[in-house]
Length: 435
View 1: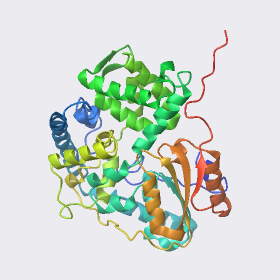
View 2: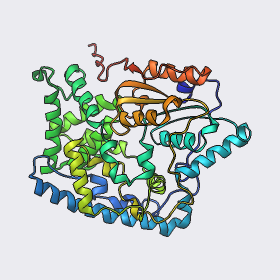
View 3: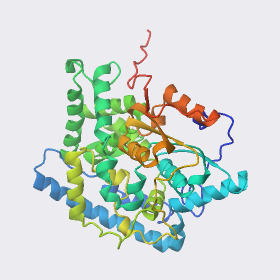
View 4: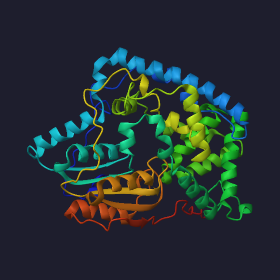
């Protein structure tokens, strides 16, 4: 519950940003259900399929073929946004959302009153726009899971992945290290013969990815059926790294797949991808991003080469972000927003804000939190949580929660740069059955 991190004395007003959730008009670029049909059995559904052991020319050729398919599919989706929604979709960017928040606050609290706000992930973008567009109206604002807002608003999305994924391998290390340390009693991917060697766990995961490229696994049960590819497995694991509370169940499903049974993995994968809502994400990200002629759109060859470099230098899961966080093709977006805020991002604020970040966040890295702290100086108080996951609430600790509650309850600011340690195991011991 939201009051867990903000305290009980606030009346909490939750809004769905324009085009998202229950707001109207909905971002429905294709007829209901047709987007899923368009993506069925394509790279958008199955992820980029490849083997890490393939020679580089062969690897590049296979990835380029899939990127060309993805490029055509995304262009179709975006053109249909223009066909079905027309100019309506141009109002679904963050700048417009901030105007909405300011207006709502004027109505509820009085014109020009201070704005209190809590948000994470994309909510951190809203928070950064908010304090930058209205620096004199900042009340108590806390954000976590920090996105690099300077890159988000000012450079093509495809150029952001190197920074965006800079902590992904740190999260991967946490997963395999804690799994090996916990042993097979708590993590099914571990084996007694591993002798706590995290590399053995990693090799098991990477071996599964490559074996699925050689032959996807089939699933045929009364409740679930389909195939499971290496691209799907990498995308599943990439998303799993963002959700530490799911790690034990994910390890069990991955272990079953290593042993030849992909049914648990396909079930979890389908659950993870349930509830997809057309192009809500892109309606925001592509309205926020710069458009040509501000930059030259990348060719498919340039995009693949950029992502191959990220895969080599930053994380082997790089290609998963192209389908799980699909923002690289905003040059196809059919509209220009009426207003697009691009900074400045370094104002002195009327009150200091709370900036919270995990040290091993696979998609909103600690580097983004450090950048925001550098931009805002004394107007930002940084609180770190030493652990993995996307945002501190993905694996909540009393230390971080208490600092947030104290800030919202009575304005108590924690020590700048304080680090909270996670206070429970990532792979907890399982209860033993009593016979």
